[in-house]
Image (cartoon, rainbow, N blue to C red; front, side, top):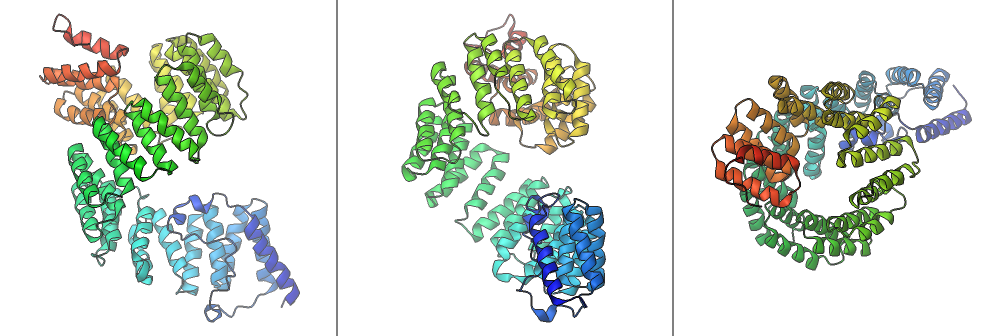
Length: 591
């Protein structure tokens, strides 16, 4: 046996190592943390655990040596040594504290089989440990083993009946990351079956159904959740989201009725105002803004939300007033407010005032964005050379900021139609950073302007390989092919992938509508284009929607769409060119 004093010294060393050694990836960022199931560092010797559960294992010199070996390896960044050492210790000692530590070490090193085995030992040696059960469930879900995870998730729910509602929401967040959305929905249905009267269970099923693109089932479950708990704003907002997929008018009617019953439902009121803005019902939206401000006069978050909605509605007076209120009320990100105040003044062509606000951001996360906007105002004043010099004189603190400045300069050149200069500038920076995703994307976009479709395709395919979840890379390549009327089946596949990654993105919806139009499927195209236009009445989306309406024989509606778009975007070359193509020698669109 090792002497007692040595045991105490070593125990202190091990606990110290647990505190000091940072994980390879924070468990707070992992799927385990979503269930609050991550083993906490320093918890291996928790005094809360009953000594009756602990094995009567002898703390031999060999065991202590292996513990020291594992912890020293961790401190030296050698998980390939620490993981097998701790796993072997867990097998030998069957001590839940050791198994818990082995689980944590293996998870942080992303050696998932070892983490699963260690967690299994942990639960076997301490069958009453709910944390062990939660960790196993999270690991199994992470490994897409839902059928194996089911009994552990059921045990997790059954173990704490007093908190079954919050537990459902934790499990829902955990399961939502699973790639097979239909399987995740079926799992949540199985878990919720014994709990028909728990509103959180019904909402968890609703969310899983929504992710599985089962809109009707999602809406039915959301309604059930709200019937069980009528004042639950989260369920009300989800129901509104589901209704909005069918029509904005249904969602608006529901939100208005809900607010009659619960007039102090702040988040619902904010979303109601947001939807009114999207529907361009600015008069009613302004009433909601005023009510929110009156009800929460000192709330910086409300002032900020109202300001952003007013900005979206181009109500610049109200936006400026509320941004200043947010600033006076000590909003958590004052530089973001200053940036928006610069934007409000830029939109009103009060350029000197805009420069003042942009210039007031002198450091922090918004610093480079403010510098880019400042340069943009100089360019709008006809001072492109000064704008470029201004950006070139900014001292970046790291390479990422340096790239952001180069991208901003490239954007200035693009806005000035200096496409070749922008292409050369971004290309030179890309040579030094050949795998930088933002440079690859922006260089691809400008390549189209200089007729280098080969560069566009090479860059985007490389970006997709580097970032397989980059929705806009798939979309940009698919849209380019569709717009050129080339390889349309491939274009559709690319855009569909982008839409799966970002299903509510209006620009990707627009691309899907455009490729369907190219494929001759006008009605399906209109469905996507209308949804895209409702979310984002952009000039290009309006041009596409009008063209497809025209092709479908709905020419008065096409004229109306183009009319409204021209009022908002009179300088859009694409919009003007589209209108000229279809209205040549015909009645012109009113300006």
